[in-house]
Length: 308
Image (cartoon, rainbow, N blue to C red; front, side, top):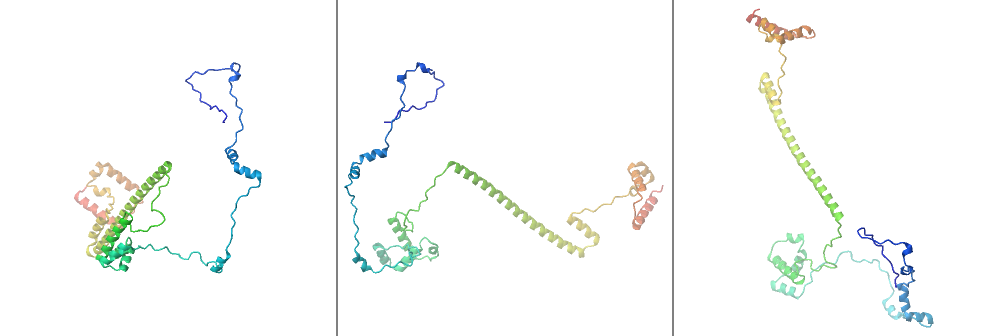
């Protein structure tokens, strides 16, 4: 028997419960929680084994043990024992050859096919060497017969007819939802990284192609410029160089007196007066002899046309 136990129950908040004081309780109704000494299952089973108990108590009983007798005469016939040099004598696997039966021999006689050809082609079926064989009537007959024979023996046209040990089945491992979610996230991250790498690689390839085109165009331009050095005049050559290299001609600032047609024009324009003042206050300006001559010629022409 087992002692009585009361399970701790959860208090229900929605239900009204009676509250008792210790003086109000009846002592006779209280449960007795004194535990009794129970015997374990092993001791009970040992008590039931009466025959073993009697043998141990009496001490007269004997447990029958078989006596082993060795016949030395038979051992002498085998000679002296010699330990083997190697425990593994064959390192290769046993060849998986097709075992011929009566139907197979009958097929070879009817079709007039040699046994060596049959064995050679059946060994090559399902390998790369079989594809290299030349197409012939003998090859086609043997393959058709062999596939039908496999379907009859096994139930499918698998060429490995004598597969040993166990079936080639992939046992699915235990999967966890957490591991599945983590692997899915890793695969997504890896896919994005590989897509970015692919895009970068394609852009880099396009950049290299454009650089090659630019290099070839520059090479052609330099070839054209080398031809122009000997074929054109210097002034024409400069214009062509500017157009090719997109370089604009640097325009020198035109002095104010070159734009003045008369003295009244100088008095009417404030900007020209400011330029005149600036040139007078800037003594550091040094002109070459050629520039001075050109300026004097221009001024003389202006004075002839428009005398003050």
